[in-house]
Image 1 (cartoon, helix red, strand yellow):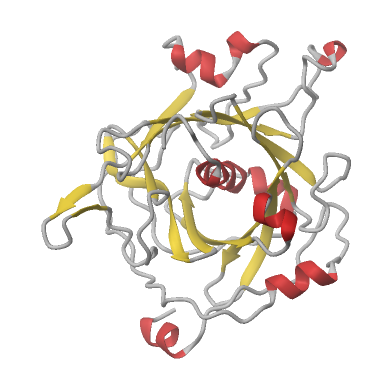
Image 2 (tube, helix red, strand yellow):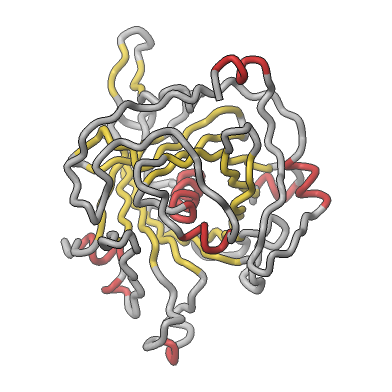
Length: 331
């Protein structure tokens, strides 16, 4: 879409038909009302970054910076949620936060939509923090009205440590600690990502330091399967012990100082329009020109989220949910 069209039109979140596991069409009145409300958002530029060489091995990252296109068909939401972005492609998405109501002030619902070239958006998944949990725990579902573990639409969760500084992303498999008899079965849950937060050297006003660990990719672009049966096999433990075989370790890109604004800034190339300590870009330390993922504020409750290979939408969405969570040890 060209810039003129974005200037002439008001962007608004909409719900379009989507297909569940059993290809059923569904929509709850309240969810539909929220997702179809007309809201005025700042214009979004479609410009991104130019082609640059990448030093990564072919089984980890592509050889060029991705182009800004979303030529992806969403026919099976559950399968799509776990599938990495195609090589040389950036998937552009929008996250909308619903904080209406008494409980949603404390436990908002987050909706993820994929942006299409025709200006429409396709619902991908929703997430919400669970109540009465000892640590932060978010459920992720491909049905915006059924955010429960007891439904077919449940596809994964995000769980934090007590301090809220370390997070793990799981798929919908079984917890081996709660079901010991499944430890040797394929039903043991996969770990899809781990996120670590630290206080930034810039202090409280700067963006928080992030480390993201995800499973590596095989030559056929399939994700290495990580199914820990004990804590020592987890992504976090392997990273902390220096055992990074078959893992991809990423970090947030450091901002640069802008003399004109007297602040630290990141170049989101028009995809982010409001300043926030939650804005971030995820890169590999060997090549900060390849943006694996970026996230930032567009309006008070609207955010852009873009991801590229080897990320999948469930990984990227869960990482953004971790950034919304309060981290007392870092703030």
